[in-house]
Amino acid sequence: MRNKEEYYRYLQQRKALPRRNYYQLSLQEKQQIQQDSRGQKPRLLLHACCAVCMGWPLEFLLDTFAVDIFYYNPNIWPQAEYQRRLEEVRRVLQEEYPGQIQLIAGPYDNAAYTVEQLAPYKDDPEGYRRCFLCYALRLQEAFRYAAEHDYPYLTTTLTVSRQKDSQKINEIAAGLQRQYPQVHYFYSDFKKAGGQQKTDELAARRQLYRQDYCGCVYSWEERFLEK
Ligand code: SF4
Image (tube, rainbow, N blue to C red; front, side, top):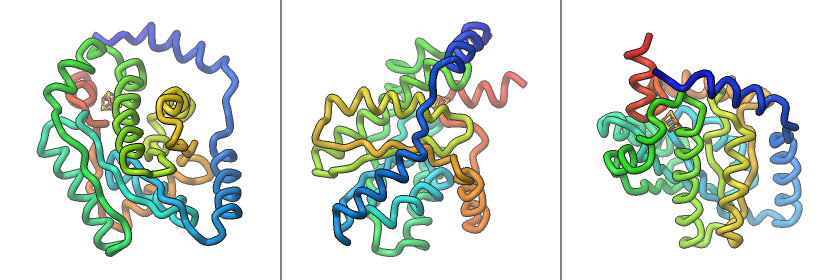
Protein backbone atom coordinates (compact mmCIF):
# COMPACT_ATOMS: atom_id res chain seq x y z
CA MET A 1 0.00 0.00 0.00
CA ARG A 2 1.52 3.32 -1.01
CA ASN A 3 1.89 6.25 1.41
CA LYS A 4 -0.62 8.26 -0.57
CA GLU A 5 -2.24 10.36 2.15
CA GLU A 6 1.08 11.70 3.29
CA TYR A 7 1.98 12.41 -0.31
CA TYR A 8 -1.26 14.34 -0.89
CA ARG A 9 -0.54 16.45 2.19
CA TYR A 10 2.90 17.15 0.81
CA LEU A 11 1.37 18.23 -2.53
CA GLN A 12 -1.01 20.62 -0.76
CA GLN A 13 1.86 22.20 1.14
CA ARG A 14 3.92 22.37 -2.02
CA LYS A 15 1.14 24.15 -3.91
CA ALA A 16 1.11 26.92 -1.32
CA LEU A 17 4.80 27.69 -1.86
CA PRO A 18 5.94 30.35 -4.35
CA ARG A 19 7.15 28.95 -7.68
CA ARG A 20 10.13 30.24 -9.61
CA ASN A 21 9.86 30.61 -13.35
CA TYR A 22 12.82 28.42 -14.31
CA TYR A 23 11.90 28.55 -17.97
CA GLN A 24 12.34 32.33 -18.08
CA LEU A 25 15.53 31.95 -16.11
CA SER A 26 16.89 29.48 -18.66
CA LEU A 27 16.12 31.87 -21.53
CA GLN A 28 17.83 34.76 -19.75
CA GLU A 29 20.82 32.63 -18.93
CA LYS A 30 21.19 31.42 -22.50
CA GLN A 31 21.06 34.99 -23.76
CA GLN A 32 23.73 36.09 -21.29
CA ILE A 33 26.03 33.18 -22.13
CA GLN A 34 25.67 33.83 -25.87
CA GLN A 35 26.65 37.47 -25.32
CA ASP A 36 29.60 36.63 -23.09
CA SER A 37 30.99 33.72 -25.08
CA ARG A 38 31.15 35.53 -28.48
CA GLY A 39 30.59 32.46 -30.62
CA GLN A 40 32.66 30.09 -28.46
CA LYS A 41 30.14 27.67 -27.04
CA PRO A 42 30.99 26.52 -23.51
CA ARG A 43 30.85 22.78 -22.75
CA LEU A 44 27.77 21.47 -20.98
CA LEU A 45 27.16 17.99 -19.60
CA LEU A 46 23.53 16.98 -20.10
CA HIS A 47 22.35 14.22 -17.81
CA ALA A 48 19.84 12.23 -19.92
CA CYS A 49 17.42 9.65 -18.53
CA CYS A 50 16.32 8.31 -21.95
CA ALA A 51 16.20 9.19 -25.65
CA VAL A 52 12.62 10.45 -25.46
CA CYS A 53 13.33 12.97 -22.70
CA MET A 54 16.63 13.96 -24.32
CA GLY A 55 14.84 15.18 -27.47
CA TRP A 56 13.79 18.76 -26.86
CA PRO A 57 16.27 19.65 -24.08
CA LEU A 58 19.17 18.84 -26.40
CA GLU A 59 17.70 20.95 -29.20
CA PHE A 60 17.08 23.79 -26.75
CA LEU A 61 20.69 23.77 -25.55
CA LEU A 62 22.63 23.30 -28.76
CA ASP A 63 22.45 26.93 -29.93
CA THR A 64 24.38 27.97 -26.81
CA PHE A 65 26.46 25.02 -25.61
CA ALA A 66 28.76 22.28 -26.84
CA VAL A 67 26.80 19.43 -25.28
CA ASP A 68 27.87 15.95 -24.21
CA ILE A 69 25.39 13.39 -22.90
CA PHE A 70 25.77 11.70 -19.54
CA TYR A 71 23.62 8.60 -19.25
CA TYR A 72 23.75 7.71 -15.57
CA ASN A 73 20.61 5.81 -14.58
CA PRO A 74 21.25 2.89 -12.22
CA ASN A 75 17.64 3.27 -11.12
CA ILE A 76 16.42 1.48 -14.27
CA TRP A 77 15.24 -2.09 -13.79
CA PRO A 78 15.73 -4.62 -15.28
CA GLN A 79 19.12 -4.38 -16.97
CA ALA A 80 17.63 -5.18 -20.39
CA GLU A 81 15.46 -2.07 -20.03
CA TYR A 82 18.47 0.02 -18.99
CA GLN A 83 20.33 -1.24 -22.05
CA ARG A 84 17.43 -0.61 -24.39
CA ARG A 85 17.09 3.01 -23.28
CA LEU A 86 20.85 3.50 -23.59
CA GLU A 87 20.87 2.08 -27.12
CA GLU A 88 18.09 4.46 -28.15
CA VAL A 89 20.14 7.40 -26.85
CA ARG A 90 23.13 6.14 -28.84
CA ARG A 91 21.02 5.71 -31.99
CA VAL A 92 19.63 9.25 -31.82
CA LEU A 93 23.08 10.73 -31.37
CA GLN A 94 24.48 8.73 -34.28
CA GLU A 95 21.58 9.41 -36.62
CA GLU A 96 20.81 13.03 -35.75
CA TYR A 97 24.15 14.45 -34.57
CA PRO A 98 26.86 12.26 -36.15
CA GLY A 99 30.30 12.93 -34.67
CA GLN A 100 29.03 15.97 -32.78
CA ILE A 101 28.08 14.75 -29.32
CA GLN A 102 29.93 12.42 -27.00
CA LEU A 103 27.92 9.83 -25.07
CA ILE A 104 29.22 8.93 -21.61
CA ALA A 105 27.54 6.03 -19.85
CA GLY A 106 28.05 6.02 -16.09
CA PRO A 107 28.30 2.89 -13.95
CA TYR A 108 25.26 0.63 -13.59
CA ASP A 109 24.60 -1.24 -10.35
CA ASN A 110 20.85 -1.48 -10.02
CA ALA A 111 20.89 -3.99 -7.17
CA ALA A 112 22.96 -1.75 -4.89
CA TYR A 113 21.07 1.36 -5.94
CA THR A 114 17.72 -0.27 -5.23
CA VAL A 115 18.54 -2.02 -1.97
CA GLU A 116 20.84 0.57 -0.41
CA GLN A 117 19.12 3.74 -1.59
CA LEU A 118 15.55 3.38 -2.80
CA ALA A 119 14.24 0.50 -0.69
CA PRO A 120 13.45 2.57 2.45
CA TYR A 121 10.98 4.53 0.29
CA LYS A 122 9.60 1.62 -1.69
CA ASP A 123 6.02 2.33 -0.55
CA ASP A 124 6.08 5.97 -1.54
CA PRO A 125 4.06 6.86 -4.63
CA GLU A 126 5.94 8.10 -7.65
CA GLY A 127 6.80 11.78 -7.31
CA TYR A 128 7.58 11.70 -3.61
CA ARG A 129 10.63 11.02 -1.40
CA ARG A 130 11.98 8.01 -3.30
CA CYS A 131 12.07 10.14 -6.42
CA PHE A 132 13.66 13.12 -4.66
CA LEU A 133 16.46 10.83 -3.55
CA CYS A 134 16.72 9.32 -7.03
CA TYR A 135 17.03 12.76 -8.65
CA ALA A 136 19.65 13.75 -6.08
CA LEU A 137 21.76 10.61 -6.50
CA ARG A 138 21.84 10.86 -10.27
CA LEU A 139 22.53 14.59 -10.21
CA GLN A 140 25.24 14.11 -7.61
CA GLU A 141 27.07 11.71 -9.91
CA ALA A 142 26.58 14.08 -12.84
CA PHE A 143 28.07 16.94 -10.80
CA ARG A 144 30.98 14.73 -9.78
CA TYR A 145 31.68 13.73 -13.36
CA ALA A 146 31.34 17.29 -14.66
CA ALA A 147 33.74 18.61 -12.02
CA GLU A 148 36.28 15.86 -12.68
CA HIS A 149 36.17 16.45 -16.44
CA ASP A 150 36.12 20.26 -16.44
CA TYR A 151 32.62 20.87 -17.72
CA PRO A 152 31.69 24.43 -16.73
CA TYR A 153 27.96 23.70 -17.12
CA LEU A 154 25.63 20.90 -16.18
CA THR A 155 21.92 20.23 -16.47
CA THR A 156 19.43 17.36 -16.72
CA THR A 157 16.59 16.27 -18.98
CA LEU A 158 14.47 15.37 -15.94
CA THR A 159 12.56 18.68 -16.00
CA VAL A 160 10.98 17.87 -19.37
CA SER A 161 8.74 15.17 -17.90
CA ARG A 162 5.20 16.16 -17.01
CA GLN A 163 5.37 13.56 -14.20
CA LYS A 164 8.28 15.35 -12.52
CA ASP A 165 8.24 18.52 -10.44
CA SER A 166 10.76 20.89 -12.00
CA GLN A 167 10.73 23.11 -8.92
CA LYS A 168 11.91 20.22 -6.79
CA ILE A 169 14.54 19.06 -9.27
CA ASN A 170 16.01 22.56 -9.52
CA GLU A 171 16.00 22.94 -5.72
CA ILE A 172 17.87 19.66 -5.35
CA ALA A 173 20.38 20.77 -7.96
CA ALA A 174 20.84 24.09 -6.15
CA GLY A 175 21.76 22.18 -2.99
CA LEU A 176 24.31 20.05 -4.86
CA GLN A 177 25.72 23.10 -6.64
CA ARG A 178 27.15 24.28 -3.31
CA GLN A 179 29.33 21.15 -3.16
CA TYR A 180 30.64 21.73 -6.69
CA PRO A 181 31.13 25.49 -7.09
CA GLN A 182 33.29 24.97 -10.19
CA VAL A 183 30.29 23.54 -12.10
CA HIS A 184 27.47 25.92 -12.91
CA TYR A 185 24.06 24.26 -12.86
CA PHE A 186 21.88 25.44 -15.75
CA TYR A 187 18.37 25.75 -14.31
CA SER A 188 15.63 24.55 -16.61
CA ASP A 189 11.98 23.78 -17.05
CA PHE A 190 12.14 22.07 -20.41
CA LYS A 191 8.50 21.04 -20.40
CA LYS A 192 7.35 24.69 -20.54
CA ALA A 193 6.48 26.69 -23.68
CA GLY A 194 5.47 23.57 -25.58
CA GLY A 195 8.63 21.67 -24.62
CA GLN A 196 6.76 18.52 -23.70
CA GLN A 197 4.92 18.57 -27.00
CA LYS A 198 8.15 19.15 -28.95
CA THR A 199 9.68 16.21 -27.11
CA ASP A 200 6.70 14.03 -28.07
CA GLU A 201 6.95 15.13 -31.71
CA LEU A 202 10.66 14.38 -31.88
CA ALA A 203 10.09 10.95 -30.30
CA ALA A 204 7.41 10.16 -32.89
CA ARG A 205 9.51 11.36 -35.83
CA ARG A 206 12.51 9.34 -34.60
CA GLN A 207 10.29 6.31 -33.90
CA LEU A 208 11.72 5.98 -30.43
CA TYR A 209 10.99 3.23 -28.00
CA ARG A 210 8.76 4.71 -25.27
CA GLN A 211 8.80 3.02 -21.91
CA ASP A 212 5.59 3.12 -19.89
CA TYR A 213 7.08 3.28 -16.42
CA CYS A 214 9.64 5.64 -14.95
CA GLY A 215 12.48 3.21 -14.33
CA CYS A 216 12.90 1.56 -10.92
CA VAL A 217 11.31 -1.73 -9.94
CA TYR A 218 8.89 0.12 -7.65
CA SER A 219 7.61 2.28 -10.48
CA TRP A 220 7.20 -0.88 -12.56
CA GLU A 221 5.13 -2.47 -9.76
CA GLU A 222 3.08 0.70 -9.34
CA ARG A 223 2.35 0.75 -13.05
CA PHE A 224 1.70 -2.94 -13.72
CA LEU A 225 0.74 -4.64 -10.45
CA GLU A 226 -1.44 -2.09 -8.71
CA LYS A 227 -3.97 -1.30 -11.43
S1 SF4 B 1 9.86 6.40 -9.95
FE1 SF4 B 1 11.52 7.14 -11.30
S2 SF4 B 1 12.44 8.94 -10.31
FE2 SF4 B 1 11.18 7.83 -8.80
S3 SF4 B 1 12.64 6.47 -7.77
FE3 SF4 B 1 11.74 5.28 -9.41
S4 SF4 B 1 13.10 5.56 -11.16
FE4 SF4 B 1 13.63 7.14 -9.67
